Image: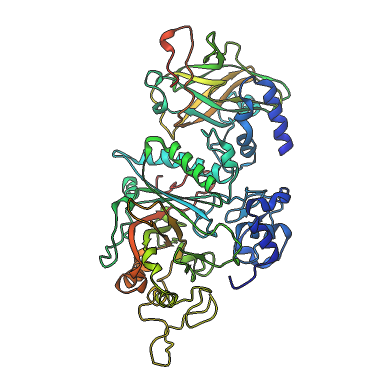
Length: 198
Length: 430
């Protein structure tokens, strides 16, 4: 188990440019040994037409930041996190997503702007989960962004998202949790979308 | 202190968490129920590390967590599986550090909000007890030291009411005991309780912090009561703790995992949502250590009816001797005083409960020199039948009342354990 996990972590580290080590560590290791926590793994098998993709791509420790912990001017959007696992021998490319809870789903990355500050922006080229590897979605790093939320996401609920991949649609269930961090300013070219990180 | 503990236990326990440095490859699960089946090395380690009574053993071939057992994968990482018929933290060997955290539910809390709270906490508790950070944990390294962490969830009378079910008669504040009580609302009844216990105070602090944080606005913290017991298990296995009076405390206990299980765990007589649950009476009992200083040892022993050194009753020689309440001295006086604590507290039949007391020693209020006492924690199926008669006797007459004052009191229902895929309170909130 440990060696498997280490190789996964190595693969993840190779695929990531930001904060990888701190993101997966204990969580993915233990999650993979837990047989009882229903919320820790979201492996999709129910959505029609996507079973194969779902088995190929799974996510552990999936959660989104609740609306009540978002800044007031950001309350219509939120970030979602977790560790993606690719069980296949080929990379899986995630290009976007959709959710009944949100008008728009984007893939975001966090980069340094011209002023040297970290800010998030859309990852236009998507995310690639390496073959037999993992890809971390974490606050302050790569994540899935739900925008134009239909209604606030309450702590302790969950939200369904379908990730669009080159292997098909992958349904994912994210637990919604109160969380104080993840307040990097958003840069979409519109200054009205940016926010204080304090 | 009379006996010499097994040599191996001394070595391991004396070194605390570092003792198992050479044992990282050991994977063992032990349980007090497996006492009889001998002494695998790993099981001995488990026993030494957990302080479990008797020669605990029972090695799981693959180290898979089994409900009711304590697993020991490596240093500091002994852990108690979360899921099972009962919650952890009631009939487990008490860990040395505790935080009792009571919460108030905000106005407007409904069943859906309760369900969300239990969803968050169930996931958090399962993760923390197995050494994983919570979903939002940015310092999961602190969770990695499980230190036998248990988190036990209790509910006050408002919760069943909000869930739309009948509240048990016993789930209410205890009756007043005006002869002894000086209750401060500051330590009063809460809506929800988390009892967080571990071998490490860092582990307790981290779990407490994460659980409070992740509940967000679903609760507000009402009070926190921290307590401790002797962290060094260099005392013989099974010997109860000493309180700050120096008394051996918690001597006679029901067999919660055996013949007395029905005294502790709710059965078919209880509503479905409580079966497998219990109750907690938590009393904060101030101990006047300055007044105690003025009592000589004979007076002290007479007050409790036990010897201070061995904990044996004044009529016996061994800790576990049954007090002879009828024995008289040459002058015809009872050898155990009419008002001795052991006589007044003595309960038989249903008037018994599991005690898991912790000491507290907090900063004194301004101008005072001491702020110490006992977090008296008692678990039973029905406090009205089992606990209150004993408390009534003690309030009426108990020499210890000269030095002790109850200043806080609360009663909680301990929910049943969560089965696979269930949240705590699953049947209550269905």
